[in-house]
Amino acid sequence: MSRNDIEEIAKMIPNNERWERLKACGVHDWQSLPVVDSGEHYCEHCSTLWDESGRMVNLPALRSGKGDVMTTAFWRPTTSVRFSATGFPDVAQNEI
Image 1 (cartoon, helix red, strand yellow):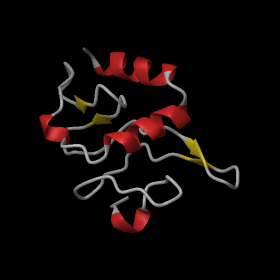
Image 2 (cartoon, one colour; image 1 turned 180 degrees about the vertical axis):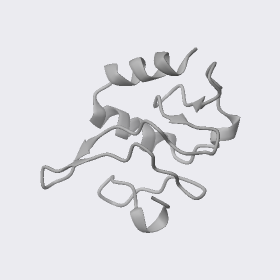
Image 3 (cartoon, helix red, strand yellow; image 1 turned 135 degrees about the vertical axis):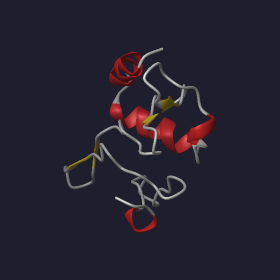
Image 4 (tube, one colour; image 1 turned 180 degrees about the horizontal axis):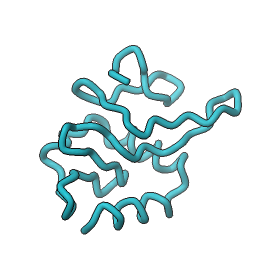
């Protein structure tokens, strides 16, 4: 499996579905996930990739209630992904 393969799979899944999958996965132990040929780890369920430092590199874009597109292509949580009640990442609990 390559990084490109995972990114192509992720593109086929609607962004809102990828967010739901990411939330359903809960906290990822990214270091124990499978590794692509270029060294990144990935989740087979939500198609999220982590670089070698633990940074999530392909989170889906999601529209906020105000119509703004929210995406964090290089978001690095301190230990886990925490979501607010609205389903968006809880920025106060994560490094950006």
